[in-house]
Length: 595
Ligand SMILES: [Cu+2]
Image 1 (spheres, protein in one colour):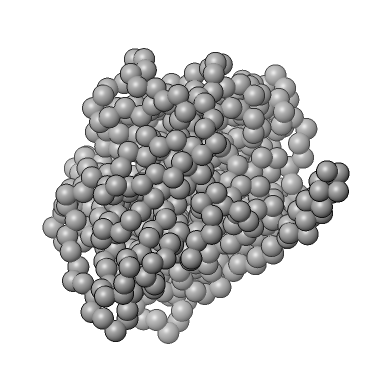
Image 2 (cartoon, protein in one colour):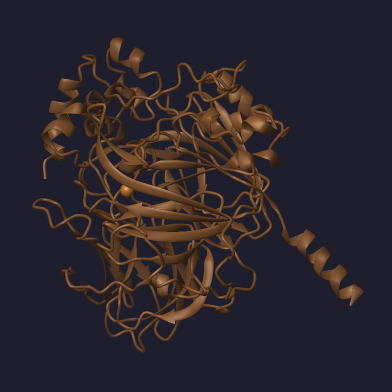
C-alpha cells in the first residue's frame, strides 16, 4: 500500500509541468463577418490561441502589452485560484491594468479540470477579440475515452471597437433618447470566431464538444441536426450524464457545456450546426443575422446543407441536472446576501444598480486595500468604496439571493468559486420570498442565467480567501455597474505580501496601490475623493490616457493597424477623435444603437 501511495505521488510529480507562455498583445486586422476591423490578437494574429494545460500544471503566462493605446489584463474564467488570489486578472479589483509598453506575469497552479476560458478583464475590452478557450485536461475523465474532441465557441460580433460603443452606451444621450439600449451585434454571431466553421467527423464515433460562449452580450441556442447528445459538464463541473432528448442547449456569455456527440452510422450526408441568438434577450431585428451556421462534415466531397432557420427551439433546463459527485445542498446557511438588481438612470446615465447603488471602481485595487487594512478595518465594508462590497467570514456557508427586477435575463458569474444553484425560478416569478422548488442535490457552476423579473438562489462555502467580484457577464452591464465585490475572509489575507510585479505595474500605470478605496493611507474611514457619481466622462473603455489622445488629435494609423492596411484609418477616426465632444461621438455611433 505504501509503495502504491509513493508511486502515485511520484507519478504526480512527474506529470505536473510548468507551462511557460509568452504573449505579445497586439493589434491585428480581421474580418470574420466580411467587414475588416482592428481586433486585439496575440503575436500579431487573431483569433487568439487556446491555452491547454494538464491538471496539476503550473502556468507562467507573461503578457507584453504592445497595444500602444490600450491597457489590458487577463482573467482566467472559472479557475478558483485558491491561494493565488492575486492572479485573477480583474482590473482595479485584483490588480492595476497593464499599461502599454509593460509586461506582467501570471503565475499559478491549476488543480481543476474541464472547460474554461481566458479573457481581458479591463474596462470592457474582451469583445474586441482578446479572449480564448482554456482547457484543463483530465487524465481520467469520468465519461471515459472519446474518439476525438472539439472546442466550439459562440460570440456576438460588432463592427466597431468597444471604446466608442461603450461611450455611446454610457452617454447621457443614450439614456435620454434611446432608453439606455445596448449597442447591437451588427456582425451577427460567430462560431470559432468565423462564419461557416466546420468540424470533420467520422461515422459511429463519440466526440466531446466543449461549448463556450465567449461573447459580449447574447445567450445563444445550439442545434446539432438530430444528433445524439449527452451533457457531461457544466462550467468545469462534471454532471450526471444527461441526454438532451431532442432539446437544445443554451449558453449565456461566460457559460460552458461539455457535450458528448454520437455521430451517425454512415457518411451519407453532412449536417448543419445552427446557433441562434436568444430571442428572449434580443428579438429578431432587421439587418441583424440571428443565426450562425457551422457544419459537421462527414464527407468533404458531398454538398453542405443550406443554412436553415431556428426559431422554435426548446431549451434544456440545466439547473435540473445533478453534479456527478452528488454533493447535497450546503447547510446551514451562515450568511445570506440579497442582491436587488435593476436598471435605472443614475446621475443622468443608464446604470445598473444593486440594492440601489451602481458599482463604481475604487481608486485602489480592492484586494490591495483588503490585504493592507489590518484585521478590524478589513472587515468594515465602508473602506472599500462604492464597489458594492460584502464581507464574508472564513468557511461560512454563503447564500446569495439574486433578485432580477429587470425584464431581461442576466448571466451572473462568480469569480473564485463554483456555486450550488439551490433554486432558479422561472421568468416573471418576482423577487425571492421563500423557496418554492429548492434542489436537494444542486448543480454547481460558475455562471447562471437569472430569468427576467425573477430570482435565483446560490450557495458556496467561503473557503477561498480573496476579493472576488460577482457580476453579470454581459460586458455592457459590467460597464454599467452590475457588479458586486465579495471580500472573502479578509482576516486570512492580512500580511499577505502584494507581489512585487503587481506594485511595479501600478507604479507604471500609474494607479495608487495603498490605502482605502480613495487611496487614503492615514485614515481608512476617510473616503473623501472616492467615486460616488456616474458620469459619461468616465467611459473610455481600456483606452490609455484618453484625455491626451483626444486633445493631441488622432493616433497615427500604425498605432492601430498594420501600416499596409488602409481600411483601418477609418476605424481609427472612430476610436480616437480630435474633437472631444460627447455629442459628436454620440452622433457617429447613434446609427449602431437604433433598433
Ligand atoms: Cu446583465
